[in-house]
Image (cartoon, rainbow, N blue to C red):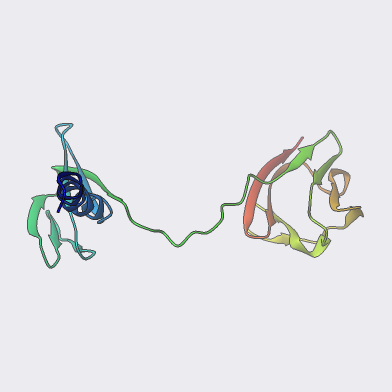
Length: 156
């Protein structure tokens, strides 16, 4: 075997395990004193909160912390399964109406008062926009639900 091939083989043996190791999930603990500690995981842990303790158990980890010591914990290198993220809801509030951009179906818009009562409203469809006239609502604070997203507005 030539020296170049041997050197390449040794480098590959050193680099590949390090690259594979970087992909394992990591549990990051943020402590009250400002420190963080990271624990590499081979399986997702079971995290149990008791009255005064935080217990973390997995196939490679079994630790316990006082709850007052751990401010928060996060994970690195963990796939979430989220494939897309919706951008913010596009709308425009004018003096007398709210225009919801890209809402082709007026049925997708629901208006609620602060007591949680859905209000009967009429929307005007303008192309791919839905327009809510504020003239039909008395003064107050309202919540608008559009496809699972919520907007709060005030009718002066």
